[in-house]
Length: 591
Image (cartoon, rainbow, N blue to C red; front, side, top):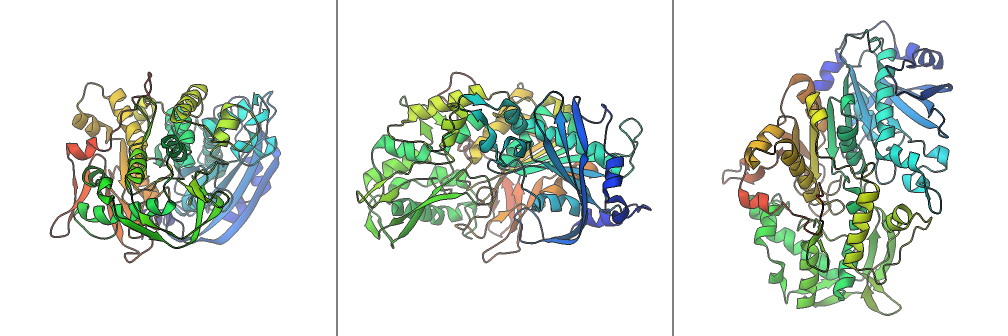
């Protein structure tokens, strides 16, 4: 199944076994100490070392990886910064010496966690490809929490700036630099000055992990040969506020459609746009054509009907599923879609706008959904919006620096959201915003960047990823045309839309849509064998087509199925223009 794994399994064997290497004494003896190998000012606590062997460790049903069974040594130790009141713990899973393929993989987290925890599929996936694989706790437990939002404040009015920078990019970079040196020592590859064996270094993550991936390309480019970034929540100042945009837009318009209206529109949109890609399979692979050809106003007067049930608000959604934070009962709904329903939906489909009508942030694609919309208030027996919890704490904690999680949306307007976006972008430009478009250092050292995004993502708009890709093209190739610039960019930075996929997850509403499981293998082949990923694989993990491996086109090409059932990657100007948005509400560039 995996040619790269097969190559790793027949790699050069050593006299050492996993059992002989996986001891605290051996690990302690090979900890990196040279200032050439670890960041200046860092001291590793040798008394903190742990080492444990895991055999026949299995991972099944992972979204990003095929099923696997591995053996590895789990190593952890702590370090601190000179004159810093901190303690950061890193963990590395070291493959058996006979499987090790001279690779190191750094992994990231989701939502407000900086890692996916012990037992994460990304850690196991790295080991399966012969890579020593690592993560960091960012130092957060030392400050009294496991999640970033638990430790961002030292107290009301006082931000924990070391934690902010650790979260922004520093802790991941340190874990990688230390991990590369430790891996070289652990497998006796030599020191940074004597090592003649290449240790390939990679990063892989989705959502917050995707933002971390982009942060490393921008802030620590010298550390990586290849980076895989999925649906990155990188435009932090805007993205966090955008999670509460839908209810505020509805409140600003002053009309609250029943939840069944939104469900009916999404189902009708999927059905209407399914065949625009040349194939009817329940997957909208061309949301660009859907945006151009399906007018939601055509649903005026259509009836809707939903049985009694419940609706849930969506929390900060960077994991496999978005967090469901509160649930309310809904009555049976029957009615007819009216002009006010249409007006609200059209406003949501075209993104957040200020009172001047200028675009503040990107909309979701037509088949993605609308985020939090309306809930039933049983007290007033009317439809209303729900107040956010973790989404709202971005404003209370990260902007206002008050240790309050809930945010009252009463009276909040589109212009308030715009002001909060500008405030967050300005405040965290050097730490969390993660939108630097000049990737020259990463490109110059030969780095490769594989960037992908689910087309039906309802948490992080895929057009935001396209906007960043465009920003890099314009900054790095300013004198070239759109076509010529993308040709140059594709030599080292490729972007892929994943038709029908949700946020870092498969999509229950489009079950025949695939999701990439082979990205690490594609990256390894690109970096180590110079095999350019003109298309990448996307595996269907549910539905009638489960097991089918589909192909994803490199942007700006989009898929289309010809009459004989062959997929081609086509490019046309109208499709591109449907996915490029200009954020006119800002006086400064937003990359």
